[in-house]
Length: 372
Image (tube, rainbow, N blue to C red):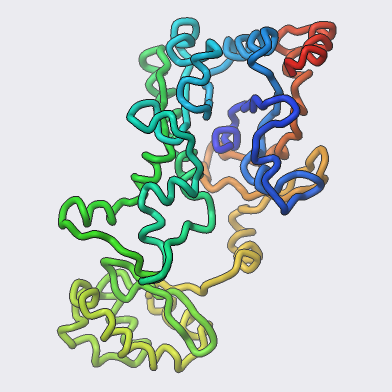
């Protein structure tokens, strides 16, 4: 989708009669279409092909003669059995960038396992550090591993295309959900690898910055993100807690992390003395990062979302006018755009087949044979 946003022509190849499994993920549905599917499939065309039928494989082969990139997310080895593995295609299509997204990658003892986002959040340790201290582990409220794996795949594809400009040769981009999840451990992994510190669940508190947590105002919660000593001093000025600035327990960030419970006891009465909106106004004016804890509908109604064109509307073939999120990367000279709605299953099959040389009689037989 991100490549399509930036102008690439993306043809989504789906299983006839069933399609991408996310088409059935719901409710909620909009006009019979899964809102989950609608979220990540704009700007694409949908073609249905049965790769177990000779004419279906022929159609894919013809598409590959015109393609710069093939993206596949089967279990490792599946496309080898159908004749479309990387080893076979690199001989016939030397310039092709072949991107594989799988659960655990193309190598290693777990390569044959399937992978889903929540399983990866569990297996890669992300759930072990998400949730309240002493409480059960939680997964993030969006499919963060799926999304990050997609971002890494885009990065790998662009790097491979750039390299091809110099070498004339494509390459294999191997992205796994597991590797992507492991990469998200970031500073938590570093704490263990370099200081033998085993991370634990801490709620919204940050393990190495303080105060960096959800706090309670007089009428609700907001997030206070004091990232350095200067910000802490400004926070104390606004909060009327200037006596904390010279206290050696709180004078530096490492000291505040060690003495966080005592610091919370000092801050709590002051924070509860004013409404949330006033805190956010005064702290923002003082250059102290903070923000309200908002629900999704409130976020999507924010004027900043509108100003950044982060919601777009497009006409869908079945659901009518649907809204999708906008393009997050803003380019000054070659900006991306949301041009077409997510496709219905097989919406473009016949048109694309005609484009690559199939005549009406052949297409009719492919329908009859179950190839499309």
